[in-house]
Image (cartoon, rainbow, N blue to C red):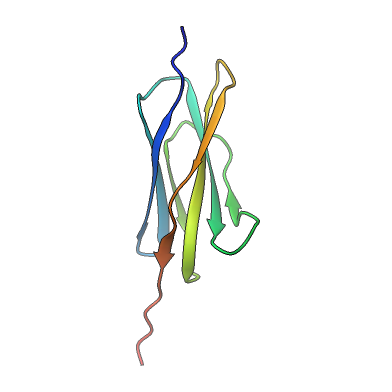
Length: 98
């Protein structure tokens, strides 16, 4: 019997100018691929959409200040079952020196 894929959390944080996202599953499995859509809060369309890949993490350079969310998709390549979850918003700030 196939185990149902359950996303526990989508962790999102900034490291310098890079938005980083990681999918945390209740029980990691093989045969999974991941896709990531990045949204700037206040806009309906994703500013970035990745293709499905084997890695449960994604990194994207973001230089514009604002709040961002990531919608992560997890697909089982055998059953074609897909689940998705959106992260909480994370803030990107830019400090200017005068």
